[in-house]
Amino acid sequence: MTELHFKNQELTSFTYHLVNKNELISEINAVVHRLEHKLNDHPEVKKELRQILKLTDKNADVDANWQDFIKNFDQVHAHFYKRLTEEFKDLSPNDYKMCTYLRMNLTSKEIASLMNISIRSVETNRYRLRKKLGIDPSTNLNQFLMNY
Image (cartoon, rainbow, N blue to C red):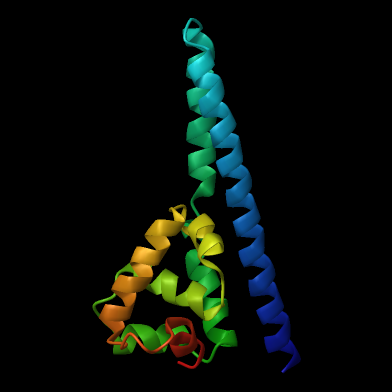
């Protein structure tokens, strides 16, 4: 039981680290975009700013660690991901991520940061996910996934 508790804390810590990292990257991107617009007469500086944007976009991608994350998540949450993939075969990779993040009880803002999308897109994804899972409108999606 202690090992599961430790892995759960590790998953939570990892997730919040990614949320904070992606929020920081978004702030950096916003600053770089503002600078880029102010430096129209300095093409060499604009080129360097575009390099920074490429680096931050590359580092906002969390897919590289996703498989390790899912392996640990499944150990902690009774093969949640495995059961989900077996029962709902028509879900997209982003649907599986959304289910996992909702199972962790993350907010729409946190999910948006992790998936590098807008909060509005998270809400749209939740609506589509509800339809794919065949959940009726009166059932809370988070509760459904927490109890799955």
